[in-house]
Image (cartoon, rainbow over the protein chains, first blue to last red):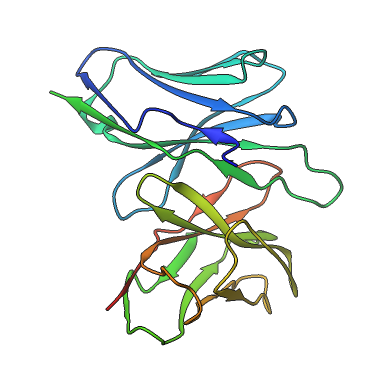
Amino acid sequence: DQQVKQNSPSLSVQEGRISILNCDYTNSMFDYFLWYKKYPAEGPTFLISISSIKDKNEDGRFTVFLNKSAKHLSLHIVPSQPGDSAVYFCAASMPAGGTSYGKLTFGQGTILTVHP
Amino acid sequence: DGGITQSPKYLFRKEGQNVTLSCEQNLNHDAMYWYRQDPGQGLRLIYYSQIVNDFQKGDIAEGYSVSREKKESFPLTVTSAQKNPTAFYLCASQDSLYGYTFGSGTRLTVV
């Protein structure tokens, strides 16, 4: 049962244009969402996150939008640069209680290619 | 510099052999995780540990074992019972309620 889904395995955009990566989730208990970026043969690195009490979070060229009613989030990259070419994973976490940490559930990833 | 170190970066194993992947962190994080990455499948949780001497199975624990004798170390053993061990393995640690720090991964290939 895939609770976090990224239905587009790949996305190709031109340099300078907008990249939009999408992610859907099924579990309404998720309260925190994150995007990670991963280059080949390396570990993922944190990109941006959003709490379920917000619908938008912006950090430089990166903006994450959350639509709770649709259980959908998206990552916008504007303008896209060739160095943004990587695999992007969305992840979700449930509330952590007491000393319990919220482990992350990841989507399948989307390969973004930005052409010069 | 604080971080997570996974070793080795590449590992080859003969069928029927057990092999242990190392994961060490000096971030003083309590929680540590092992994920497996396969093409088109994203990151799937194998085992996790929230405190020393305690660990829990993840979604795909069969054929794997772990130990957490020290806060800094969370080694993963891929046993001969794991039917498809060839994959990219990622270790992560977690300090705050949200967000991981990942290691650089180990590519395991069965020959």
